[in-house]
Image (cartoon, rainbow, N blue to C red):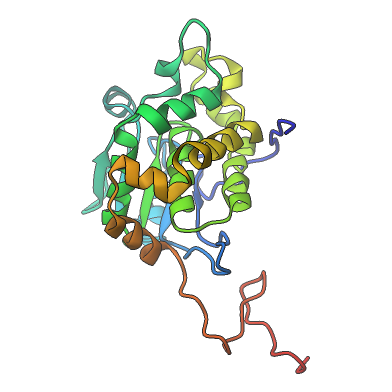
Length: 259
């Protein structure tokens, strides 16, 4: 497959976070969609404006934050503190710390997390407990650590493969201001790329090594009850057979023969 990367302008809802978005609306394999306003993904929340915080906590009603940054990142960079919002830090190794002299590909870093990072299943299982309260999961750039957690959660609740890939690639246009934010880290530019080949390699490994998302969850020790809670919290109920299905705009479609 030809590597595809995405460029363009940021579509983040927040001024101080450049890679923030709602995972709601993504299609599932059984014809439903993910609920809106339940699970959000983002880059670091350390530079939110007062308006951002009002939007995040008051209008969107976010009540939980899952921070995937390392303890040192979280301590150095900080983040918002708001009322009774639940904050949990489950650190996944950063791309910066994943580097070696050989500069591994992003896909290799993702596969290391998949196979060897014991905190990855902990993060997924924690989300099952935090939801259905509106929750943000984030790291530094919102692309890599957040991207693989989002991909696994989306896969476990039945999002289509195309939706998972498309969501990952949406981070591409949001990278330029994030690159500037972390310029002092002197990271190789390729680590900020958002290529289809990286997420496809990850998804293929889930299928080939574990037999799919459910197989990965079982081997990682994630309970079936946790997976069921994720599905219940994040997916819309399947419509009754005679209930009109929503079209792409979200409006019910007209019954056949009525216009």
